[in-house]
Amino acid sequence: MASERIQRRISILLDEADEAFAQRDWDVVQQRAQDTLALDPENQDALTFVAAAERALGTSVPPPNIPTPDSSPAIAPANTNEVTSFANGLYQVQRFLGEGGKKKVYLAQDTTLDREVAFALIKTEGD
Image (cartoon, helix red, strand yellow):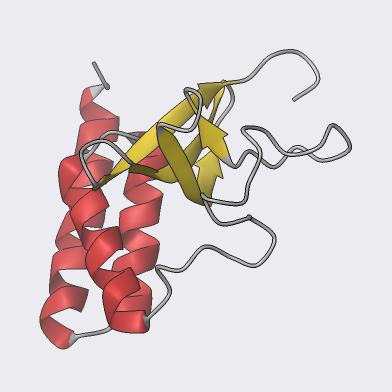
């Protein structure tokens, strides 16, 4: 459970995302939601804001350096740290959201339930 301070910060970020949403300022919506996900990778409100901003900005397509689900290996080649999927392809990575001291967070598509999810990958030494 996050501390009271972090919960307040999350509330402020989500309020700012909500205000930006009302103004249709999609860049701010996306940034505040991503900031929230950096603190709480499973925050459903933030995930919804990110998805809405991506749809509005037309940025929900994976970046060119991440292969499409039907052509990608489960993990990128060893010379890169880019992850393309998790759980034997069940979750296809759409993009990297951010990282903290112990985790890297990715926006992924659950191919079974056809929904967007945040996936937190615990770092190991050297990551």
